[in-house]
Length: 349
Image 1 (spheres, rainbow, N blue to C red):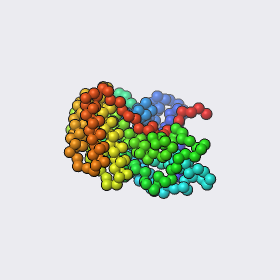
Image 2: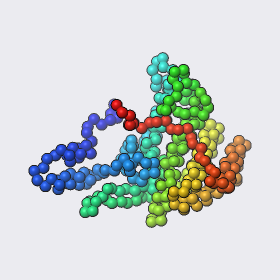
Image 3: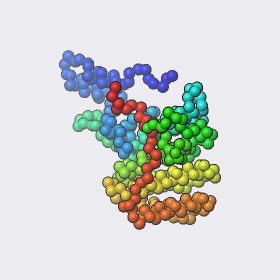
Image 4: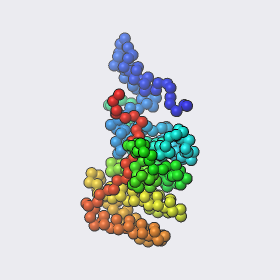
């Protein structure tokens, strides 16, 4: 009941004062004082152009995030998400509605973390800056510290953890094929298994979202630049090692979880290959990614595993080998498109 604030915000007050307050004299000075006082109180103005792009750098400019510390809030969001999934049941739809409607109700819950994850990703290779002017009092620009980057990385890696993103077995029984007249829409899960609910596809979509955020060419280029200026910054090799430890080097005895881990692993390998072939980035990135692909291949080759896992590992090895031979022929396989979900759209009324 208290999800939304009922009062006007701090920036609203500043805006109204700036545009509508009358001054008998020294208008320019008084208007400037309104802005200076706003900035001194901790308010900051950054436009959509700096907040919306996937590879944007500002560590505090996001859409639809919550919390004063984005990493701490992602932890909170994931806990809320997990609890809500545990409680998800047929009570989430009205009586006499088809059970297949449950699937659509589940979509915003499953992807509940998407906007907070995007905010956390911007801390990595992030900057804190203002539209500062000469003789003003605002900070011009500074790098996000390495400690903040590592905290953000540790948190966002939970969004590719199978324990977090696997849809529980018992919940799958809630999602039958779609009832007639209740087909899938742009706000539904996509499926590679026809009329059946695709639990693998949901994990594929969720993990691709995270990898595209973490391994955006502009973001990893900033990692190279920032690390060269200060050794305590998070570097690209460290970032990739942490992802490898949480993907390729993870395994489960539970066959459902292991198959989902394979889904995540393929997404990671393909995102690495895509990054390796990108030309609009620092060339150091291509070298580092190429080296890490070799390390992954060595691990897969020497890894002792079950018979079925050997088949998958051999397939990944072939994928890497063929990529090395003809990198220009590589075409990334896109995961099922994430359902639309921004709280505010651009529709006319």
